[in-house]
Amino acid sequence: MDTGFIKIDPGLDYEKICEQIEPAARIIAEGGLVAFPTETVYGLGANALNEDAAKKIYAAKGRPSDNPLIIHIADIDSLYEIGKDVPDAAIKLAKAFWPGPLTMIVNKKDNIPYTTTGGLDTVAVRFPSHPVARALIQKSGCFIAAPSANTSGRPSPTLAKHVTEDMNGKIEMIVDGGECNIGLESTIVDLTDSKPVILRPGYITLPMIKNLLSECEVDPGIIAADSLKKPKAPGMKYKHYAPKAELTVVDGSEDAVVETINRLSDELRKNGKKVGIIATESTIGRYRGDILENIGSRDDEETIARNLFAVLRDFDEKNVDRIFSESFESPNVGQAIMNRLLKAAGHKVIKAD
Ligand code: AMP
Ligand code: MG
Image (cartoon, rainbow, N blue to C red; front, side, top):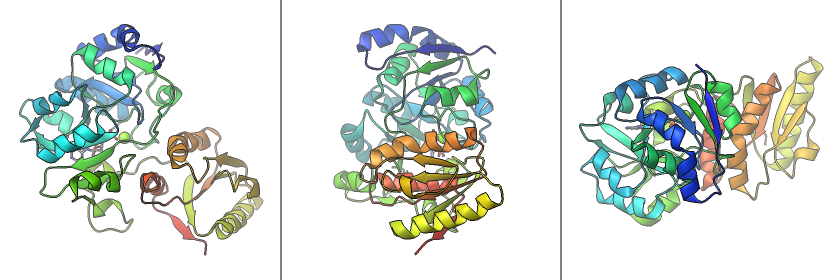
């Protein structure tokens, strides 16, 4: 298949964006696949109510069929056309965080096909803030089911060129809207039990949600590597975000981390291996490796989040044999960064202290 490619500047007037999105919207309405930018990562969209279209998403990504898709909407009221018995907590969260990087799980209405929900009676819904995403949903006249637009298991795309790497020839169109601002997938909160549970950490953090709902916890199944609990979001159990080379996270004080990574890197390089290192602004000058990536300043978690997936993809392109990364912990976006990094590392962590 020839994949069409259009570029839309998200800074244009919304009316102009709506005009330019027309060919992509037509493809969605006719049951085809379009990759498009959102504020989190690029999504791979299809009409959520059309089973054949939704099936094509799983095929293009190589995604297991029990891993449900998030349905994207362009106004809060649409939540009631998709969800059944929508709880008050959902309205509170929607008013505070929509449009934005928050996905809510509610019980599904009968019109939502099981292909979209991976066989579940619940459904994931998000109202994105990115103007290109909103224009695509509005102009297509569809609810758009869209997982991240990467081949299953690879780091999520934050630039159109990442989408091209994985999807060229497999989908009808790619809409390039520049770099995704947040760079990590949406926070997922499950509202189908008595207590809200975060199934996937993201830019909207636990303290932000607790501020509104008082009760909320993080799914214990996603925290520990050796947890016996299964994560509640089916997608969280799969290996994900992994670069081709083995990645190890090194945790500890700055000096101990630098010293440990340099020692491991020296050994590997002596044996002819190509070593990549994920460093920060203050440490990058202290490392010995073949490819050093500055992921940003430790004081600026948002930049680190935005750069993470691109840095992981870059190591694939440069064919490194091993990767070491510093560790990023904090109660805020750091939790989402670490969640993705640990999954990418298959939970391999070395304590440097
Ligand atoms: P992606 O859009 O590629 O980031 O994947 C969507 C994520 O949402 C996956 O981790 C899914 O398992 C999760 N998800 C979607 N629908 C549901 C649902 N009904 N219940 C729990 N998790 C869901
Ligand atoms: Mg994904």
